[in-house]
Length: 274
Image 1: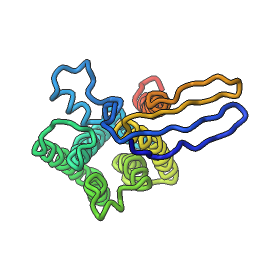
Image 2: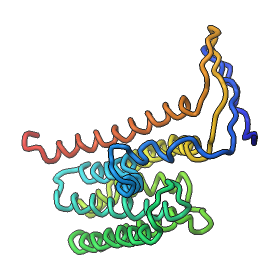
Image 3: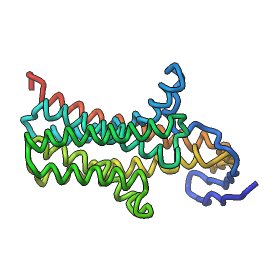
């Protein structure tokens, strides 16, 4: 058994968390909490569902909606095109590239199909971006080039992985879609939009801070051993499941919180009663 290290000991007023250790055997969990859902029939459907990262794609697209709806009036056609473009670029293209590079989700999708999905996803987003350039502003070209460049560099870990960082993730998967969507609606950026972009970046940073240890537990940990000793003498075992549960509950809540805000802004901009 390979010793990975000891969990730091914290002595507080209420509890004492003792040590755990982990081995290097095969991981005991699916690669993500949304991976291979049983309610979908067939391995192909399950693989493609997993590949889309539904909770995180939903979170990402909520930033697009929030950016577009910060200020009214909102052009529904432009918003629809922007949402579709980011779904193709990130939900399909970037996630296909990510799976192509190292197979982190362990899907059985052939590499050729992943390459085709990446090309179609990013290519479709570029085509929709060109429509935006014609309809809105030539400055949208800057957003297009930046988006495609980051999708390739981040997910394929180009430049020795220098762009595969927390900061780049927060800016690219959080602030960027919100600001792009705002610009697509209003052909400019404003101080409030920059603060909203910071909000999206912080949400994305929080998502990464939660998902990174969750991925480590699911994909690189075979077992966890330990116990938590409370000040009243009671003992609770520490397992991989007890460590995963609060992380993934927080991730679900984070995704739904952002979607709820996006829905509220949509209602505000499009409801005839407001």
